[in-house]
Length: 164
Image 1 (tube, helix red, strand yellow):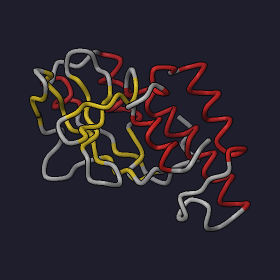
Image 2 (cartoon, one colour; image 1 turned 135 degrees about the horizontal axis):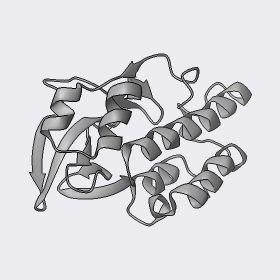
Image 3 (cartoon, helix red, strand yellow; image 1 turned 90 degrees about the horizontal axis):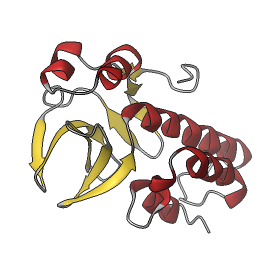
C-alpha cells in the first residue's frame, strides 16, 4: 500500500491474528502493513472494544477488523480470509483477502481525492462524477471482479455515490 495516501494505519497484533488461524500472508499484511485508521467511504479500522472480536454468522467464523459509515462491522473470515461487511445478518462480499481490500481502499481514496480537488463537496454530497470513479471501476474489474456483483459492498457504495 502507498503509505502517503493515508495518515495512519492500524496494525493488528500478530499474536491475536495467529490465534485466529489466519493464513500466514494475511497475518503478515495485517500486522506489518495494516489497514488505514480512517478512510473513504467513511471507514474505521483498529481497536474498538478489543482487538479482532469474534462472531459466528451463517456458520462462518469471523473476526471484526473495523466498521463502515453505518457502524456495520467489516470482518474477515477466519477460514477463507475473505473480507465481508456484516449488514444486518447478511455477509456482503468486500474483498478476496485483506491485501486486496487494502489496495481497493487505496484506489478508491485516490479517486475520491481527485474528485474533492475538483469540487470540495463532491464526497459529502454523495455525488462523485463518474469520470473520477472510472479508474476504481477499472481496477476492480481487473483485480477483484467479484466486488462488483449485486449485493457486494463496493457495488452498494458506488450506488450510494450515485455512480451510473
